[in-house]
Image (cartoon, rainbow, N blue to C red; front, top):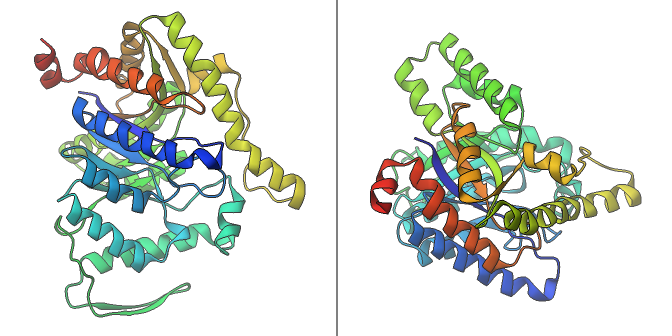
Length: 354
């Protein structure tokens, strides 16, 4: 059974409209809660308007209080930009506010936007090692009722005890991002599920096959492997309309504009400073349909979801509001997806629809 979630990743090009876009996000969260979306994933990006609410930790608190059942996940919290004890406290608080509805998705931080590290005064070369050290600190904080000490490269800590203690025992549900094959196999050897970025179905199928092989070779049994696959997610941009033609009319220009906007500031920084972490090009729209954009009528999108299900991945992180797309167009797409696509893959939803 393929699982479905929404990646709430809203663009705001005009600083004067930030408040309106953030209000749209709360409305989208409530709609997803009403329609039975399993998880609402939040992003973290700074200084460029590519993610209007910027801080997913603060925004998650608003979403949790505005909704009743939907889980709120991070895809991901950029751990390298945070003090690990402050992040551990904040996640524990969210876990209590949502009474277990939080999914702590962790990653090192962006691999593209050097200005995010510059804005926080953190050398981007340290991102990976900061992430590794911080993750260990957070796990220790959540599971040490008598406090702990830590002496590492970036932090020296003497912590009496974390408060509030996590609602979920022994700690909030944790998942890691892996944007590369190497990262996915590292998590396979640890017996852990993971979050994947936008990619082709061929890449997803290959990665899942290697993940299964590696986990089996590491000694994990079939039941553990099945649980991990069920909890592994891949990201796709989704636009659903009544017809294929209408979906393409709405979706392809929005997708192209989104891709271009996301690289604009990093290219400006490169022109001014000569610094770039990783170059990213925006694919032509029709190539993007294969690599990251699923667009069409409910029947067309359902067929594409079946192809994703065949890769063996457990769930799809669907991003519905793309670039400058109006909020009402995204809401219509979400509603069509949940009413006419999702029930074909979930017995409970199918029964409710019948």
